[in-house]
Length: 387
Image 1 (cartoon, rainbow, N blue to C red):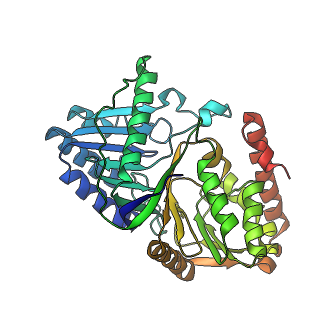
Image 2: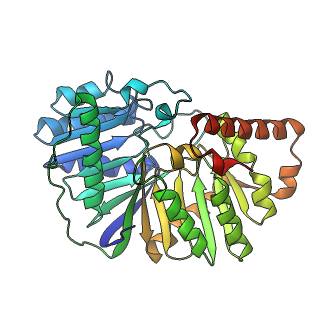
Image 3: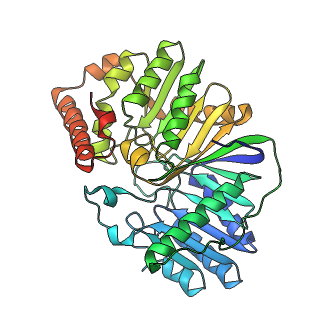
């Protein structure tokens, strides 16, 4: 993992901060815009972003948008047409696999949420192109993104260009060109934050994001605070959390309190007993849907990105996180998470968890068993989920 110094990194909380920053960057673009997302909805937010991208293409900016064939399956015939009509380019990651099945290759999705503007400004995080507040009666999705300037923009740009060439090659059946589509450049130092860009793919970087977490957990001495939308860690990750708690670290996880995907929701709860019995505090976010994928460990390690701590993110999807070694940023992220815990979450205690009825216990273990069965069928990482 290569940490690059000299970056300026701004934490953006929810779409209320992210989308104005993204739209301003798109409107100011002069040469190129690259954007990757899992979901690109045809709602108010999606139309605002697609209109801005189309306007950029019309004024001569090279616009390239890559979306997932399942998460954004309506995009090519929807708001994507506006971008193409204006002169932008659109590619679909695995469009032939828009319907999910238990076949291993069909579960490999593009889950990254990235943007690079003019090779000098980048956005990395977990926020899709979709309205934050699309569920009546609930608050906005709780999620984060980063606005990045400095040397770290170069590897983000290079990774996006590499994947664009691979998708283009797969579509046309020819090798991608050796030269980059356009140079990413080497942005000069503009701040004092050291950070690394870490990806998960199905070749050389299968375990990189998980390994970054495990190394940080192994070295944790004071506190661990993780917020994750879909949290179903395997044995190694669970043991790393438990070992940290046994060393005296204050270990806290903020998890999904709303039932968004029932299978993962109840499978996650199957792990509560083991975590609670080992001194790990669990909070469930209740104000809206938790979509965050972040962590803050001790005083100087933090991560923000697209990767959940579940088998589908850690073993199957293309993901991207930024790891930051900076005390001020870590404190800022921790303060934001602690505010969400204090104001919008409910603690699950061991006593309260054990009082839940027989039906709840049955649902939890059925769901967990189904996830293990699915992993066994795909023959992908199931050994980490055997008890």
